[in-house]
Length: 473
Ligand SMILES: Cc1cc2nc3c(=O)[nH]c(=O)nc-3n(C[C@H](O)[C@H](O)[C@H](O)COP(=O)(O)OP(=O)(O)OC[C@H]3O[C@@H](n4cnc5c(N)ncnc54)[C@H](O)[C@@H]3O)c2cc1C
Ligand code: SF4
Image 1 (tube, rainbow, N blue to C red):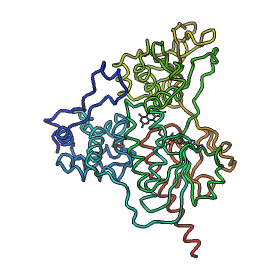
Image 2 (cartoon, helix red, strand yellow):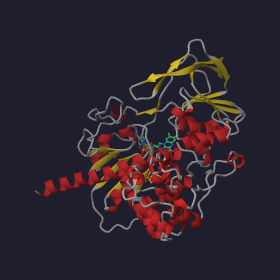
Image 3 (cartoon, helix red, strand yellow):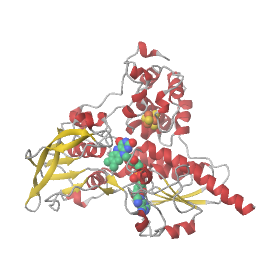
């Protein structure tokens, strides 16, 4: 270990730009065994590992790096898996620059961080290849059943943790495939779908029951589900697209990011997608303008590039330094030919039936607001016009109105519309009904959804045990 002094930082190479623009495959190549060993040996084995402190799952990073450097890969996998239900997903798509890697001590001392995410991915891919990832072995079946609404990372992680203890788990999801945004939001070039499907298959083989195409609020009320199960978890994510109300909003070919991305992901999965087939949701040959500066916007612009758009522009109201999206993803988009129009905001959509162009205001950054970020201020009479055949709005997501949808007015929400839960237990205002993931936090990250799923599993177990004790007494 401690070889950072002599061994430089290396990431797995990216595929050539021209090649990667031609398909939707992941852009990073795999580490080979020797490279993963070498890169792991750069870790300085800090007494207080800041990488671990800044990983939401408190992954035992220094220990699995040491095991990898020593070639003890099966042990490294078991350790990585013990705190993370999807290490191969986090290794690929966590914004490591803001989490573990951004806080690595050797990064701070100018040597370049240990490439933690890539090594986490390597360890887990190697485990899959060697058959070390196996369905759970249940020591003792329990009769209590838990109904989980939503098969995204929060629901799946909770399901796995409860199933390990022998509980009976049914997951309900309104999509036709399990995985939530890992399947229908995040594009293949960041996370190939087989990675997610492999995980859900193994959960299925572990005895977790999946009921797809089942929408709570339509196919059943929350009350009906509560009658079937001893406890309920709501992990439905946030899906209401934030809007920008502008003149021309009703013109054709203005879409929300999820509509565009879901169509593309379904197509990639081999589904027939009529709106893609007939060209409506296909960027090919078109001038595309994406509004927004977060990770969703980056996924939209890069998807449009791969669909052979004529031009792809991204409008963002602040500058590059103040973008919310991961710096790594912005760099990837720039490499792939996306044009960023910094310090601009849309003023009006223009067209007869369909969108033809967009007027945009120029912006200057003013004083910092309550959040500490400098406020965008429109420069009067500064607007200019950009040609557009398709507009994609990627302005973030809000929660749907869950109490109304689920027919359960007793379910309390916060002023942001997220579900109100007890801070320690994640129990909602209805006893025995818990909530986790984006529907509690608001739009966040996969790693936080996994963390919440693991935490809420413990609370559900405590709740079920306390009920059992009451019955005995
Ligand atoms: C385009 C995009 C890109 C992203 N990129 C990244 C990234 O690179 N890295 C990262 O860490 N995070 C990323 N995120 C965020 C991340 O995907 C989410 O934070 C995470 O998926 C939240 O997990 P969840 O389980 O709470 O919800 P979700 O993943 O949203 O899953 C919720 C599930 O609930 C189901 N559901 C909803 N309502 C009902 C109902 N009424 N009945 C039955 N089922 C229902 C949905 O069908 C869905 O399957 C991205 C998000 C988007 C939109
Ligand atoms: S889960 Fe994310 S933050 Fe934690 S070690 Fe892995 S990549 Fe880093």
